Image (cartoon, rainbow, N blue to C red; front, side, top):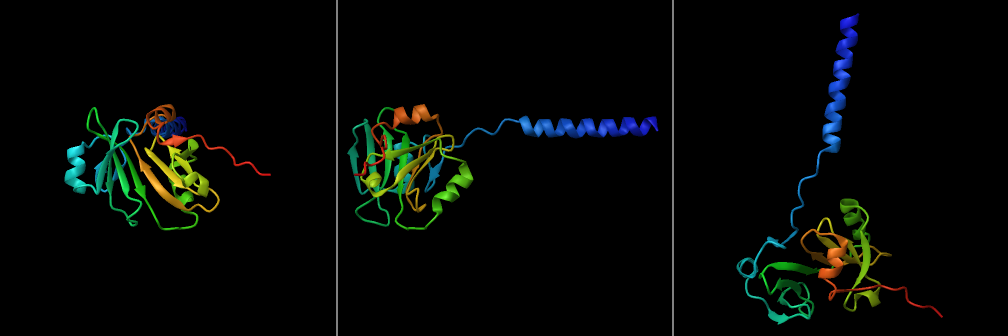
Length: 182
């Protein structure tokens, strides 16, 4: 009888230890998000050019980044790859989507959890009801209409804190305010 009690205690103790080990185990380090095989935050401009080819156009953005435009489904709204001029690394990719799937935003929220912030991109999309749902730990921001769930744009960037995101991409975002009604 005494050996059975000891055996049960040993089994319960081992099960508890296994549970605690897996419950408190640290998560693997974040992997930079990728777009068309680009590793944002890791790949250099040369890597971008070898993987994506020559851009449609190139310009210098206001935040001292080179912006490379690549064809998307709409000739007037290209994908954009931002290259930091100092280290020549791809720091931001904006994937432009033109399909309108109702409720698609929910898929991203289910995958990444609630967004850390809901901001506005520094373009015309906020006026159309689109908001930038930011998941900084995943290195993804989803520009979507919160009412319909339609996703219009996906941003890829190296995983970081919200404060660093807001500082690093300050020229790309703005504070969203509720429009006034009269």
